[in-house]
Image (cartoon, rainbow, N blue to C red; front, side, top):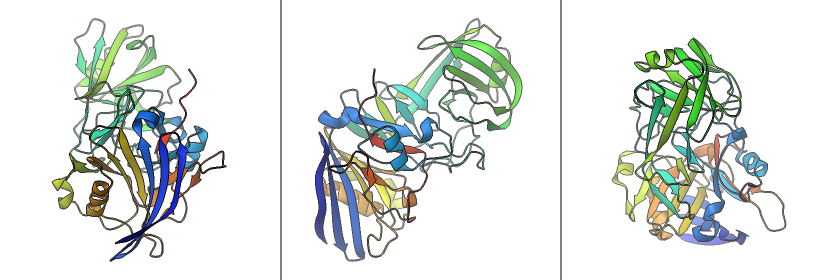
Amino acid sequence: MSEQVTADFQVAPGITFVQTRYRTAKGPERASVLYVDTQVAGRDFTPALANGFLSSDGEAVSGIARRIHAFAGTNGDYYNGVGRFPLPLGQGQPTHLLVERGAVVLGGLPDDCGVLEVATDGRMAIGREQFWGTVQAAGAPPQRLSAVNVLVGPGPLSQCDTAVQHRELVFMTDRWSPYPSPMAGPAPVAEMRQTGPYGYVVTAVLRRRLELPPLPAGYSALVGEGSARSFVRHLHRGQLVAIHDGVRPDNRLESAVGGGFILLQGGVVNPEIARSSLPGEAATVVGTSTDGTEAVFAVFDGGQPHIGIGVGYAMMAGWLQTQGMADGEFFDNGGSSTMVVRTPGRRGVTVENSPSDGQERLVAECLCFAPPPPP
């Protein structure tokens, strides 16, 4: 296999963009890559949602990046479709874990997919995390919190495990959607106003709802399913509620983003990917070094015989090994795979790969690098 570097420049301190053309036995391939020194740029990493919500009309990666003034980024997690009233219920949201600034924004879909983890010092790693949560209402025994911002019922939502457990008590926040959202069935809903980091006060209890209304900033809701119906139904206006949640085993992450299969673990190809077929197509891949101080964010073109034929799991894992990465993860692929970069002399980002749809696809999330928000 031969290779030719066609672009190589610094995007921002600690981030270098390199684009390489490969000639393989099966045909041409092109990789657009961000090489990240996490000790310099790790704190600039931010998972950014389309239109700022988990479920919305979707947004192109370049649109998300420009809106938050990012200087580079790729598409992120898989999603269940994009649109205001998609079917089945709940489409539009990312399908795996999301932690922003240490707070769980989306959690409770158990699976064996990988998680890109970012520590408070910017170091990056790839591993597995599981959601946990508890709800304590004044005068009632503590309850297990099943999920945060997961409105759909059990189904094949994850790329790595379709056995999604049945939920009981679900915490919905103002990050969910700007639109009314149909629920899977009638359920009691307790609307709440936040009063502190973990504290809430119940403002209303709606005993049989078929739709979740948009939640204003600072407001949230508890939805009761299964045995949790009785708990929610018996809450009352003015009652104080405390909610604690996080992830295990590492509950001190600055951010975390779930994606697809883990490709590499400790420098060794994950045997699970050998049992999962993927034809050569466009793909988004992230790798991290053993000590977390280096990372690569790569987009491989696909579905275009003269630009890039695409890659399968084995090629992704092998490529990460050649880059010196110890761990690697596969994110959303196909027409979603997009790389945007701010090139020298420009104020905003441009698309640097060739999306296989012929244009950018609307997605639910961006793995972006952007200046920190003002305090």
